[in-house]
Amino acid sequence: MYIVHVHIRVKPELIGAFKEISLENARNSIKEPGIARFDVLQEPDDPPHFELIEVYRTQDDPAKHKETQHYNHWRELVEPMLAEPRSRTTYTNLFPADQDW
Image (cartoon, rainbow, N blue to C red; front, top):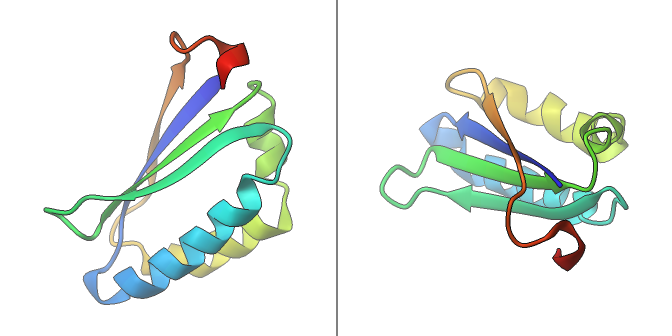
């Protein structure tokens, strides 16, 4: 598995709209065969801070995800909502075993 954490800080007045758009993207993303998991998290003590946890089956799957209509629609809508540029951290899976996802 190839895991990506996307760190996002949203303009406070746009939190509700960001959540709605991001949840729709997540619902579509988990339908992709290359995605094992797609989580949308919000930090309770810092509500403008969000984290997307994306678990891909292979290292090629993030590029396939970025070609989808729902991802490009999400990106287009949320870019003006960001208080700062998105950042990401990538990980390789250690546990559970890939076949157990």
